[in-house]
Image (cartoon, rainbow, N blue to C red):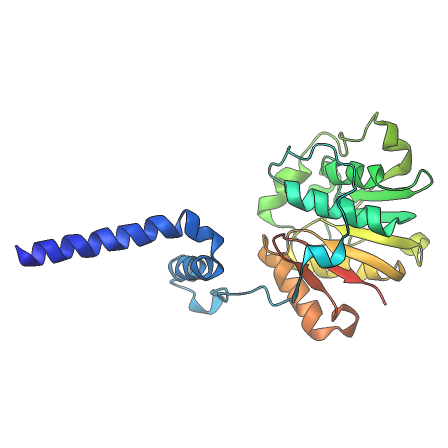
Length: 265
């Protein structure tokens, strides 16, 4: 009987800890890392060499309050957060970065529905211009590099940028189409003040897009990446650039978001 009581206490204690970890404990980084570690062990039992490190996010963090002043940005569709979108907070951070930096030329890789594109347009001067590049669904089977299977649904759509079509700010936006691996960036060289990279999340594409974008940036410009903490291909590529390429040594991860940034020097 005593053993039964002790076992019951043990099971209840474990259940309590599991319940906490899966709810309020998710706000604790140590709890999240422990859960991720356990998940990776079970997910990769037959391939231990493929286990993702407990903390793969090695890029130093910066606090959003170190980057921004007061929240003066204008935002639309903030609460419409679904698959493929930035979160409410991330959209506000991006919008405020645009507002603060006041770029004349923005280049975006990955239009999707155009929600971020529109919000960048809302926070720039009337003479600003935004070029947004998207892969058309007709080219899905002929990309130069392999894209992630999980992002195919973001390419299979009837049109790109429906959020800004017919909007008063649409005059600032130039929608272009193509594969970022073969698209010619030459005409934009030394002309871009701010870039937003949210195209393919595959490792090779993130490397490609990051280097192509850097080649067209003005000194003092800002590169913004989305999904650093959400997709392995993104964090693997950005970690590599941060560790091995001096041009990317100053990448920073904005705490509380999946956004990474680099001020071009």
